Image 1 (cartoon, rainbow, N blue to C red):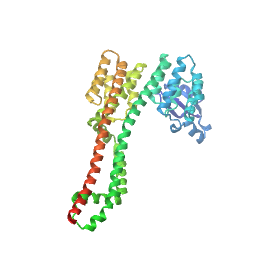
Image 2: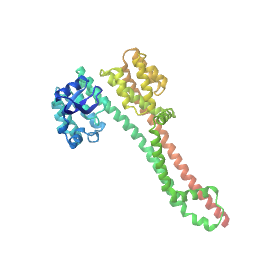
Image 3: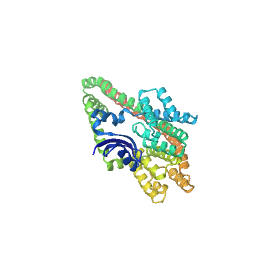
Image 4: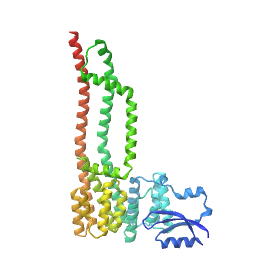
Length: 407
């Protein structure tokens, strides 16, 4: 019996590839459809060379898109579909006006699949590096409900909010990071270039130096001669820590600790809650069931402590016990999160309340970030000033002691 190489979209929205023995290509397609998959390609395996196999694999690194690019695609599709354009014409316009080759390639692939009869969600699933499972699920729900244009608009809103949140976190941390680098550079410069200028003078005097000055000289010599070794050792420690964190138990302990840290832990809980409630609410509002939504959302969660809490909440939801109480017991989200989720469950408006909670958490994240930066900047400045003042004071103390000996 001949073998056929196939490519299909699985029931969960994932791309499936493999080889199946059957009498004809039609039998392969029928077998895949019975499994709940959407066939995209079925051809004799003998006809496909290794190069063609590599080409058809559509490696994800060549088809990745930035979140900004995906948001623009969704927004423009929503606008054109809402204005009455058909999907093929909208995709053709996007392909013609794409600003980068990568975006043009992905849009062209979407258009080819749609013209071959595939739904937009199935076409997006062919590019897992560009479109996440969350995005594919939202589009599939929009197509099933006949509300594709509003769904694409909500998806664009979701991506834009996620981008703004990530950009606000990165922007808030730029200035403190620059201050830390400047402080380390200033102290290193003083220890390796300024302090050594005074060493010959101290050695010629033969006087007993103050302990602080001697410590300063020894530290400067160590940094000058062994600073590279210290840096290499620090890099080795980072690699070891990364290797340790790959173990689930170690990573779980660190993630739990991060959520419990003063100030920083509160910020992380707000960010995690904002992402979770935004994605959950968007999925529920677009008609995705709660169990399916939780399964999709968990793939976007990086914190293992939050992930464990979501798994327990999903098990509770399957048993009909609700979602809010397990999350409240886990204490990985702020109290207002579980309170609003419980209120949404009681009023059968979990999707709307999740989106409302997401808005609140976005605002709280901005407030906490502003407070964190307001505390970090003066704290770093004070530490830097104290370090420089300590170095200068040690040198002046030694100079004054030499003057006293001379007099």
